[in-house]
Image (cartoon, rainbow, N blue to C red):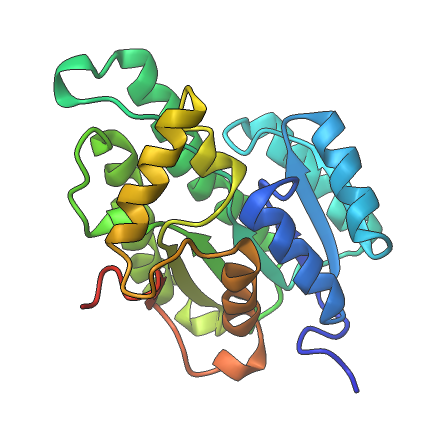
Length: 250
């Protein structure tokens, strides 16, 4: 039986760990050839090994336009096209309104907003009509979580792009959708804490707000991204699909 993405060429930015890695693995299982990016070579090497065949890792920073140009030149040379883009690279740190610095602001917006804009813009010449773009946002696009204001604003911006780009790309039949994870058991989540005790407190607080009573797993996001990338979602465009155990909806 052929996979949902059989013969597709896909890109996952931030594909070396967490949600990105899980999605790259799913994409390959569903028949796609996948390019993954990340900033750390050791993590990229480990990711490539865990995925096995059907993957090329490119060291690249999504907020660096020269890195993106080099990435897309390689994809064009090797495959000639790009059917699916999962703009996943991103990150954030806690900072209350009184302690936000210019460095914190610029770093978060560069990665999460500028990076998404130019990842998509520079992919478009390689994308055939009918392609799929999935943007990774977060439940914080609609939740006012304290101390997470800058990160939340970046994710609201990402969600907004999907609306605009759905209209801008409709003549080409390119679908743009957003996946918005709730609390997921990833290095990015646990990395927010400085100590093990702090990590347990953060996880307990998050889990208490999830109707399903647990953290999500990266593969649960990956399966949703596969759906949005595939023909199963052929009439789905411009949506924000929450994968959060019911945290936002109930």
